[in-house]
Length: 228
Length: 318
Image 1 (cartoon, rainbow over the protein chains, first blue to last red):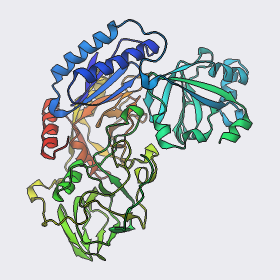
Image 2 (image 1 turned 180 degrees about the horizontal axis):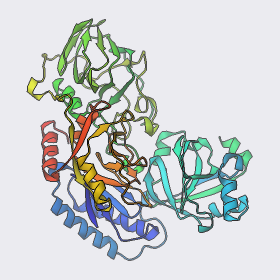
Image 3 (image 1 turned 90 degrees about the vertical axis):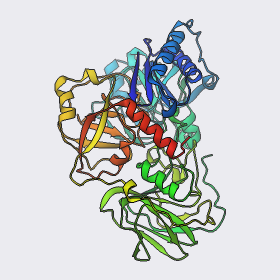
Image 4 (image 1 turned 90 degrees about the horizontal axis):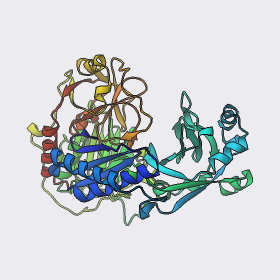
């Protein structure tokens, strides 16, 4: 489905789930759109969607629609991707250390109690999945990662916290993510990445790219303190 | 790329008073959008573009955006500057200079912008543009993005400024009066609305309200969004995953009121969206003070696209 969210932009929604295969198809659509449309200024892949922003002097809505329809058909026709990210930019798996100490994770004990699990089991389940970057945004360097094990999936808090610390690891439904900077946030906080991982702005902003893979390594409180 | 530049010489001017919020801006950044960076850039792009044009600068040369005035600059060099945007009663050593024009200044002179009587943001451009740090293709300051130095914070008292063509001499120029934008006091600002893909999911009553109501600019409006007060819009889709935004996306947030996304907006958003607007009307929204009445009117996207193309061609934006 193709819609026009502004006078010089198009939003394509692919009929796919935002999983590894679905994200690979959205990224394939992104490459085809960049090749087949003149004057593309920016593209944003997010979940099962792609935004294309064009140049106003080169934008013909009819042509854009037919080119994107053809690109979407082609992206949907391609054979399912083998496991593993489809682009070189996302080839490396990002590995982040997480301390799951309840002192640093204000929602961990409540989440564990609701799930009927020990806090250590929540940490084990959260850190035993290789996550896929489904989208970036909300803040620079924030990635929506999926999917969280269904046993620890929890809706976001009814009211967001005014201040979530930098490096806080949160869960919202089947998504998890790391807050790259202090700010408001409503995800359930279950761990913390040492702040040293966010000090360099260029590194922090460019860390995650849609389609990339992310792993969390549990670390002890003493190692967390040493790395902060 | 993100490290502060080592300044290469003496200052050309010193900020004596930065006022409530003064930042370095240009036309914003197109790269980094994929990583979640805001577009950034001058809130009122028309005023910004004219300031650079009056000085013979490139359209995207870095300039100052002075919010609500309260700004004093002491010059250390002989030069020409340009002042456009909100009417802040600019004076040079106490003598009124007028705006939408170039101003010749000598070392030791003081430029003062008072608290703006109308409008929100004035622009000060300098020959060749400000010498400043850049990241992801732009010098624009976006506080929410956490970039270092002037890329992530407003100017401070005592800040030293340098620009890139201090020796350029040029005749005084001003914008003809018929080209200076003017708002008629009390009249509602008309904001074209291009209904978007979620528009059909709002109730008939809410869709009628959008066009029938007289909205008002809320005091919490900022560089991220112009927030509107008016009747509550309580329908619309509830979606799980956020979708990409564009400049001027009109979204209904948790308080059931619409907002229009501006330059420091996020790149994706999860609340219901009414649609998009004309990017050129963002200039007028950028100058609208709290309490300004706003009406949504139906839009012709093709006419809007042609108008943007004409502007980009006129100002030679690539």
